[in-house]
Image (cartoon, rainbow, N blue to C red; front, side, top):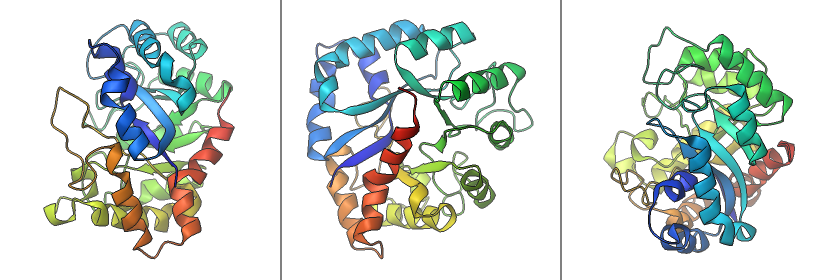
Length: 289
């Protein structure tokens, strides 16, 4: 079965790899082996840099392959997008997805590892208004709880948490509490289940596809089968930190192991298709062209 991944740092990797053809070297084979047909590919921000130039580099390196995949261009955080004019430039380059923050506090909102008493700013509200007007995906993964609820109060038109799991099963600061999952569903949002080991479970015996399926089952219980996708967040190609994905899901090439675990669960074939690709395809149809 085909698979969409609602969160991948592929464009960040392309932007900062100095080798020739980094897409062919680090991504193509794994994506083909896992039957990954597309998803939301992002540049992420844990440092200051010129995001417009970085995105231009990424898209230039991706150009020879762009007809082989169905990709929404995204931004994992907006710390380096200082003005609405810069956001508009990125929109005109094809970006249709954004998170206000990574884990940090910035000029727009507050991330999961920053001040819990701080929320979104007036400029953050203006950015949300722009994204709503342009049918962009507004992504609440990485926000702290206060910012999460304040973003939802702005009535996002297209709302997701692209790579977050359930806090009840693994109390990682980036996972979502039951009340957040309920609020996300009520706001018309979707969630992408993430395959980072500590997000799946703090128990090493469950840091595998079977443990991941437990997370997916829990998310479905709160969000409904029509609102859960895969936001895998594969890290095997990132050179600056260790791969912290699951024991049997180390890269996109291993997605077959996840599909096998899903088939061994109580999910029906139709349910599995929704999780792997159908729910994402419904999301994609709502995004501005």
